[in-house]
Amino acid sequence: MKPLRRWPGWPALLLALLPLLGGTPKIAGAASAGEAPTAAPAGAVVQAAALKPRTVSWITLSREYPGAFATRGPAGIKRVALTFDDVPDEQYTPEVLDILAREHVRATFFVVGERAAKAPSVLCRIRAEGHAIGNHSYDHTSYAQLPPSKFEEQIESTSRLLRTHLGFTPRFLRPPYGEITPRQLMWTQSRGYFVVNWDVDTQDWRGLSADQIVRNAQKTLAPGSIILQHAGGGIGEDLSGTVKALPRLIRMLRDQGYEMVTVPELLGESEEIEKMRLY
Image 1 (cartoon, one colour):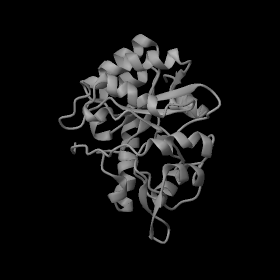
Image 2 (spheres, rainbow, N blue to C red):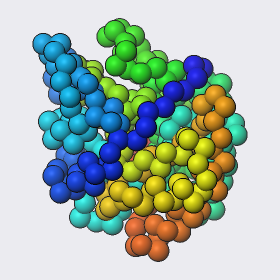
Image 3 (cartoon, rainbow, N blue to C red):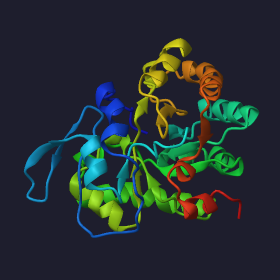
């Protein structure tokens, strides 16, 4: 797998304003074909249909593509979703799963196809323990850099692999680094996918301490938040802080009255909730 490069988190102010500006993402069925907006953590340079670049924030994407893109769930109930990217690996993913099992928490794991092909037993464990699963590309290449055929294959090859091992194709999709162009977003929507980014970035991939990770999680936390963490490391990445922080993060959320649910539960996706049940 290619070394994973990382983007710095995008401004906390924009994330904090999201509950005030947008409200709840509305999940709709498949829509028109084409391709759509770029969602990079610091606001993204994207291409419109005329291929003219323009800067589009995730807040704008959530408002312009409510049936295809979201960074958070409803703000009216104290529920949040823990999400873990870049899985599975054979070191950190099992450690995260052990903690979630001990704490009786279900989360959402975004799968890199190339990694799943190498660690199918860990992928199957994620499903067997009742967690939700999403598509996170095949080899973690930025979608914004790809021509249409390569972009589509990144998604579809992982979907085929997931169907082979799990018996279903996940609806939820998270682009590597949160990057997706307008045309691409329209294509994913036309195929029935729903792009899920985040509004709380723990920045755990930086090798931070447990204290720093928990502090980062608190900065933009609000009812409906989708919290980004990682349970698979890039080349040379140390996620021991993630593992140490997770029990503390769960305890902090419970102490503040939050219920932890999966992304399908947070967004009210009944079909995806059904897929979480073992066949």
